[in-house]
Length: 471
Ligand code: ATP
Image 1 (cartoon, rainbow, N blue to C red):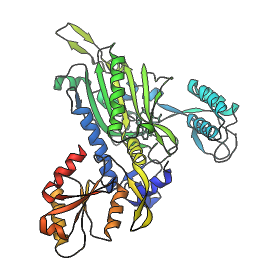
Image 2: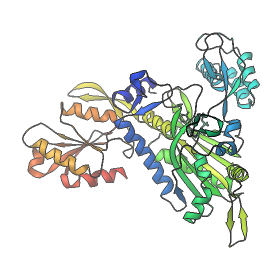
Image 3: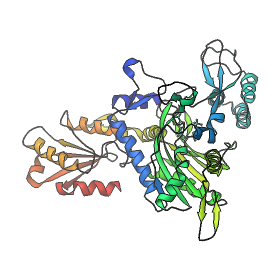
Image 4: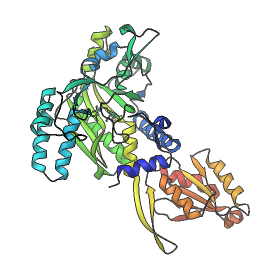
C-alpha cells in the first residue's frame, strides 16, 4: 500500500495540490489545486455530472453558497450540526472525541488486540450523547497523542458551521453561514425546478459545489478539510418507494467508482447502525486509504424530513400534486452525497503504482499513475524524437491539432525515456513520438502508458485511436 507521504509529495512536486497560502505558512484544513490537480478535479466532476444528469429524470442546479439563515434552522444544522469535542488540559490539544476513540481502536488493531478493539468499537457504535464518549475515553484510559496524559476536559458540542455577516453591520440580524452541505440548495429549489422543468417524481436534482465545515481536527491531507467540494444528487420519490430506490442508487454509485477505475478490493460498504435524525436507511461507500478505510460517499434515504421542515419554516408547500390521479404528497428523498476532494484523493491513491522495469538492460523502477484515461489530467503527450530534421515542427503541428480535442502536452527536453517517465508519473495514457520515418510516411508511434507497448499508426488516425481506447 502506498504511503500517504508519497502521495502528498508527488502531488506537490507535479502540481496536483499545494498547501493553501503556503508562502504565509499555510492555513490548516485548506488546500489549493495546481495545474494538473485542477484537470483531475474537473475530470472527476465532469464524469460524475455526465453519469448523473445525462439521463431522463435528473437535472442540475448551481445554488449559492450563502443561503437564507432560516434554511439552517429548518435543516437542523443550527441545533444539531456539531461534533463532540474534548480538550487535553496538559497539551491544550483539541480533539473530536469519536475520532480520538477511533484512532485508539486502530492502534489496538495494529497491535492485534482485536477483542478489546471490537469491544470499544461496539460501545462507540452505540454512543449517543457526549457523556458516552467521555466514559469510553476515561474507562479505557485513552491518552492524548501529544502529551500522553489522561487529563481531559468533559466532552462538549462544537457547531461546525462557519458564520459570517451580510451587509456592513456585524450583528445577529446579518448573521449567515457558509453552507456545510450543498443538499439544502437543492431542497429549497425543489418547487422551482419541478415547475420550471416539468419534472415529476421519480426525478432527481444534482449539484456540484463547495461546502465548508469548521472541522475540529483536519488531517490526512484532503480527507478532512474545512473547505471542500461535494457532488450530490437528491432523488424525489413517492413515499413507500424509498427502499427500492435506495438499493438502485447504491448499485449505481458503486458501479460508477468501478467504471472510473477503482479497484473493487479497495472499496467496501459501511451500513449505518446509528442513523441521522432525518434518515431511515443509510450506507457509506468506503475507500481503503493509506491510513485505513474512510467514507467517500454516503447514500441516504432522507424520508420527507427536509421538504416537510422547509414547508413548516417557510410556509411554502413543498409537495407534488398529481392532477391525473388526484394525488398529492410530500416526496421522500434518496440522496447520493459524495466528496469531490475525497474522491480526488482516493483516485490518486488508487492510481499510484511502482513497477520494476528493464531499461537498456538495467533494472529500474517507474512510478506510474494508472488513472482511468477519462480522469487523467493530460490525455496525450507529443514528442519529437530529436530536436532537428523537421521533427519538432511536425510534432508541434500534431500537438496543435490534437489540442482541439484533448488536453495535450508538448515536450522536447531530455532523452525520450525520461520524457515517457515524466508522463507516466502524472498518468498520461498516450504518448506520440515523431521520428525520421514520420516525415516520410506520415506515421508516428503511440505508446500506451500501462503496457508501455507502442503501435505505429497514421497521423490522421491519432484522434480515433485515443477515442476508441477512452470510451
Ligand atoms: P464524516 O463522518 O467523515 O465527517 P459525514 O458523514 O459528515 O463525513 P456527509 O455529511 O455525509 O459526511 O458528506 C458527504 C460527503 O462529503 C462525504 O462522503 C465526504 O466525501 C465529503 N466530506 C464531508 N466532510 C468532509 C470534509 N471535512 N472534508 C472533505 N470531504 C468531506
